[in-house]
Image: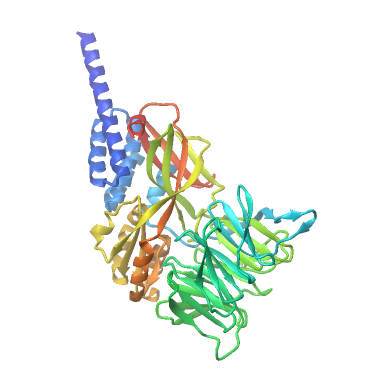
Length: 547
């Protein structure tokens, strides 16, 4: 009789375990397909059938993630507490805890700035024959604009030189992740766009007065300094003039570079030694930001809510000076996440510095996992609180079942989808596997603040019709963290045109399927070895192999 009872219990346990694995695998598949209601139902079935207490925390964590994507913050918080009760607190849950509490801050104090590399250019014997004036970053490559030789030099896995094919001296280069093209301005008054391999060249703008292209904002608008007439022009992505800041006609001013962030344009005024700020929608001038004391800065950037200034051999942030090792001059600086690139024409070099912050502003969000040709493929996004395009990822780490593994990173393209003034329920049900551009009015933001974490996981970029000066700092922070900005009513049609042809760049980590350990396995991706902002998803061998 005893052996019969033991056999019965074994068979029951095996059936329960099988049912639990089946339900979990189906739940992960539903999550991959953004069918959240089905995924929650299946994970509840897994919770009711699990016999392994060690797996319960993982199940509760996964349910918290699903509830968060469904906009149920209270339920997600309760799920997470259940996970912690079973498995105690873990860095695994830091990511989702941060989203639930929406406790992000853009204040990112800098700890140190250290030189990591120098790009010396192309040598011919002992002669350097390039003159760097500007630099752009695309994926894992640096593209240096060589003004003297009128070409662009790529420094990545290969080193290539691309002639620009224009009989004029180039003044600046930027890369547009929106349409995956480079834009180069020239002294002859033209701006050309180039394909990533520089084989395709198209005129974007002409008849300008000594233009220098500054940047492109999240709405696709281009900012161009016309130094020949002391003005700054803002153009839509189709070349139409949106706004002109003709601020220096009454008084001679020397201005330098400009940047756009969340509906505000920042312009460096060397005459009055200040950063001038303008509301892009209303064109109203806001209060300026004075230069720091000391040597005159030549360029600036924005890190979080901090203005960072650069002079010939220092970076200044919050009144603190950070030495730029070996720097002789800084004609142009590009701050991408925690990587600083400075163009030093005195030394004919581009220097690469690594910035250490008190808090890591970069972390990944895993969207989906799949199985292809013996490899696990994990698709993810980089959420960057410094609000710069992250293409260079030297500190990315992938762990499978807690062990660090070698992997390859590829860039994949996904479509955008536009939502024009949707209601809350529509926003909370969008497909996380595409880039969702959501246009709302500023009076919708109070309600949307409650679902900040959901917007992050749902891959939503908020484009707000309104005046940023009417909003709280928390609301503005939410907009810029999602990758959105402020627009006017008249710009909606340009956004619609842009969305129809734009693809969103995502990343895919690929690695061989590890030996099966049974039960639930995990994939963790994080940026920086000491970061607590880790995103983890769980899967079963059965789930992966079924795909």
